[in-house]
Image (cartoon, rainbow, N blue to C red; front, side, top):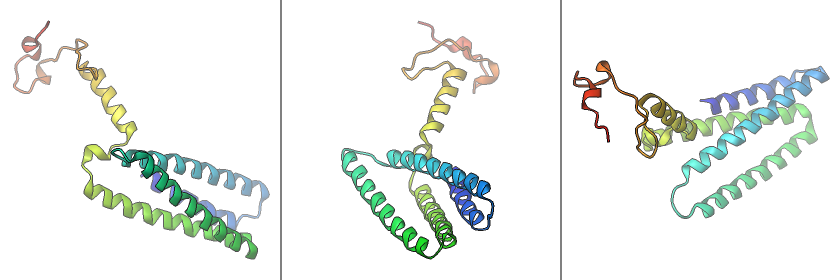
Length: 169
């Protein structure tokens, strides 16, 4: 949902800069737009990397890169044509591109959520956080070792003391 917020933020900033008459405020808005774009780019790279499985990874990443560069070419040309008319048209086009990006992302996200299991939808950061919580709470490492946390009565599903059932080697 953070990605959707970035698209909305970029669209709102694009519209806000159209109506801004202060040079200082325009610079601040533009800096915020650059920050939103940078965060979007980082998240998109994470999504791309997580979506690629199998051996043709390099080929798939090259194909993604090709489409990104084609998109950058066409948006650059579009912005150039709009800038020939006015800056207002350029930032208006920017807002339109942000809305189109938001709609595309929502469409992709809804289709992805229908096809992918919950475990596969978790981002890398969510998986790391869950693993750390498991390790801290249950005392289990990735290697399967036990760090010694003893479960209490209320931790056991069958009501018996789990510490009594625990095998110690």
